[in-house]
Image (cartoon, rainbow, N blue to C red):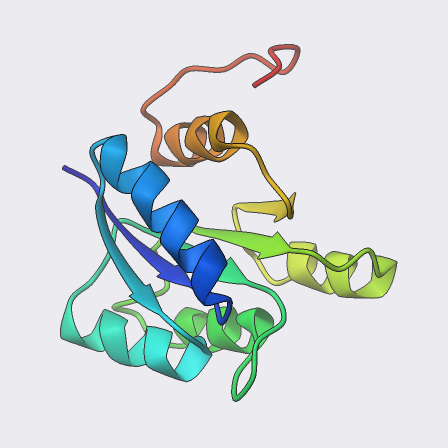
Length: 130
């Protein structure tokens, strides 16, 4: 069973995403900001991290940058979720070395397909729509 850490300050979004991923067979943990996410990773590594871009205390990009400086965490794939339509913020997220940047709101089908793609569970072609 793959483990996923959700790092998002929106408790409603945490709850929905956790439910969706748990029903799909993933072991899911949550953290409310980047600092808490790094603490959770130091306690137990995850196979994938889904992190919100904008959060209090430590945003998603800062968290990813700190992960890349730690050899134990640098290899973990990351999907950034953002509700921001700001081009500069999205570009910064894409340039931070994450595996994927997705826009909120997101359907269950899309997030599950994206997770499977990043984890290598599902073979997708460039023309296949999820």
